[in-house]
Length: 249
Image: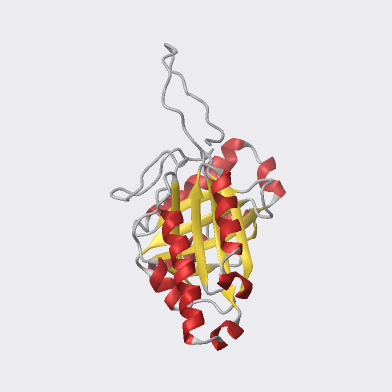
């Protein structure tokens, strides 16, 4: 089921391919420490069942599922599932199946962010040269970088009352700062009315230090003064499902 599809037309009214917006979820899970008291055999069965579900879901047409460990980078979450699809039912069915696994009784979801893709009003296409997954920003194509840095964020209401030209001026400065860090790829998703935050941003990079320096520098931008909240922030380590689940214990 494709959502929010609308054919574009040129001046001569010839139809263009439909652009499909995507539903995006960042689901952070924590394992109850009591799960590690189960027998080796019980935990092995639990892990295998979860891995099978993740692999099967990630192989579905139109679905992107990336798995990340937070073991060692966060104290209140153990792993994160980044699920992308243009069909909202994919998200529902996956969560329902996860709820029926054996390990589900030992999982909590301390953080969960739901969003959609949307064409940016400030920039059409500003990915760095040579960056994988260049697109019109309506379709997220995750790369192969080692780390993913995720955080929700909310801007002041006063920001939206500024003239569009003024917001564009400030965002142009903000974006230019990001261009100085070509090793960091940004994925911006939007949650207006869908979840508690307004945006969820996910940065892909092979360098933790480059991302830290990028965020530090962007604190000096004028646009950043209109930020109400941009926490919590998560450092996620990309891993295949089996390796991610093995890190749980």
